[in-house]
Length: 278
Ligand SMILES: [Fe+2]
Image 1 (cartoon, rainbow, N blue to C red):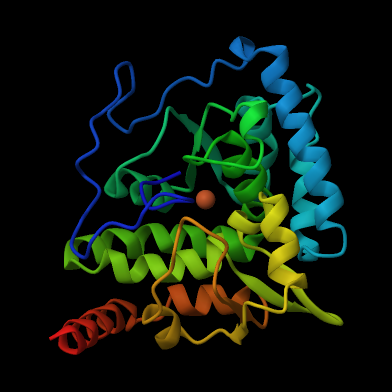
Image 2: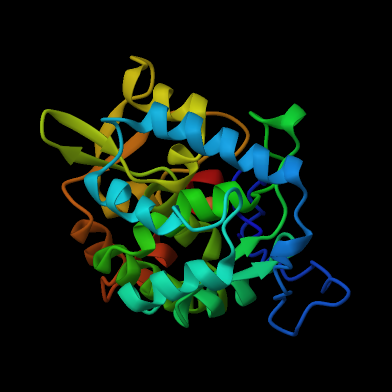
């Protein structure tokens, strides 16, 4: 969860998202106890409803590694995963853990967590009346959407690298450009798959409507992933995506994030936009 995440309007160029105030009771890294025992039966039931619906929607549509990673979420408790139990399984696979946060997290805090292989997840869940609408990422988006692929060694590495690159981009004033790479891969990425395309982006796999739209609708073009093109392509966070970028496989995400010239490419994209706006 971060301040540029799902359905949160992108900040203007140069914004760091540092204007968020630290929540009462949170640690300096914005983490809070998950307090799993405090979830209500209704909150667990909402998780179960969302989980069952997405399993159905994603059958044959998500990358195989996502399905394998879902086993991490089939825990001994019903409903919302207990992060302590989840982390035992996740850490054993890739060294990642999930940490609870009460809401949106400033960008510097978010990327610092990622570079330490910690994924900040909201500890709240949407209400049943908002089942298809998300004002800010909740535990279903953050855990169902992101955690399965954190068990994949390639995505585990790519996400840690994104933490490092995010801090570099923040320092260089080009985070809004780098965020496009995060957006079009981690959140809304598609991959080639036998016979067509498969979903791996967390924003799609956690959304019933978009998991159908991304693969079935003839409207959004499915473009081959190209780093320079992605960095030059703004996104919208208040509607289904107007395009998707398709990687050959998840290694292509690591290659992009690990590109030694990535921050320079972000600067060039920002310069080009400033020049064209004049
Ligand atoms: Fe997300």
